[in-house]
Image 1: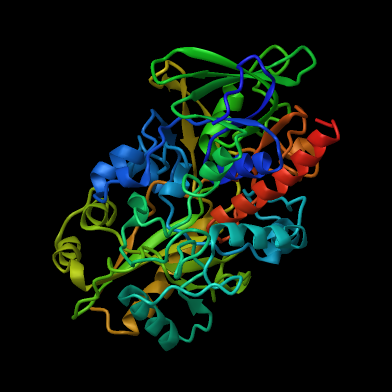
Image 2: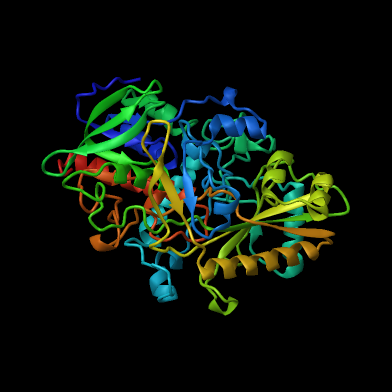
Length: 520
């Protein structure tokens, strides 16, 4: 591994997940040395714990956070508004693996939907045409099934129930992917052994994550200085306003300074705005790169909910991949349904511990126990759709502090009426699907802590509307880039990881070109 002197101005990437991990690989592959600062440890696959609660303690980002707003999460999980990983590889070590692309209309929601009261809709400064080649590159990197001639995953019982229900109610677009777990050996990783429960990390290595692919390959170039357990606390700037260094604390609390010629911020939609807000100065009194007052605003977490159904005979939904089925018929914009935008239905299996925790937080009673007592007879799906950006949904600095004495992030979220209408409609459609194949009981489960965290540093054509331009480059600090899901102007219905990776590949290509031309 390359060692870069802390006084040497380097390309500094903060975070090693879908965005940051992709950035360091693409840049080092292009011959550009990088320092990667990751707040978590480097957990190796052999160290993954295939047990839900111990694994949660091992991998989850459990630093202090506070929550406000009318969303159900503020009631059920006030100390854990988001469910993310603190480790090399970030949340790609935990993700379910779904890799759908955004649709064309989802890049131009303001033009498509028109003004929606209470929403801060904005068209992206890029289009699907701009993204198509990068989507292909991202799918090839991840190994998305159903794409590039790669084989689909086999159907498990949870999917068979799901697909039979889809056929019964008249849906046309359903399949076991695209999904980021190999059905067959690909790119040095083996095919799936259908072991399930790989929210806890995939010991078999068939599921893509940056700790398995991008980070090791970047290290092999000899140009990456990877520093785990390095928690960034501030980005500083010179008198001209250019970012010039990153301050971070190691696991023992010692403060370090790494000089920087470029900073790529990929801490996710909570930590990235938090860091910018904490990096205020006389020149940037509201936070670094925040002259527009848009840093932290327009937080999105997707419309979510789950539906579980109990059947007479065993399903054993935990066997096979955790999430390996899609229905895409509802990913359309049809305002006649009573809301804008669309949503996916996706198969989902949880272990007994997580199902008990998330099925009805704080609840109990005969319906709850009927599901738990008949665990082997349960099928499940997750509902995920576009939620409306709102300026008041935002990340701010809390009065409470974390383990380093720094302001914790407060995550404020109010459900928009469009989100509520979509969720109720989706619940009804999910119940109809399961009832069509003989469900004895259906159970509507409220949203979990957020796993899709979007917005807060959004792309915009005009500086006053957002934080970064079409390349993820700060409108105000020209050597500062944001390389994670926080740049998303709107959330679309699709799981975001594929788009984060595609955007990072595109950004790395642009940044490498700018560096070689001396324009950063």
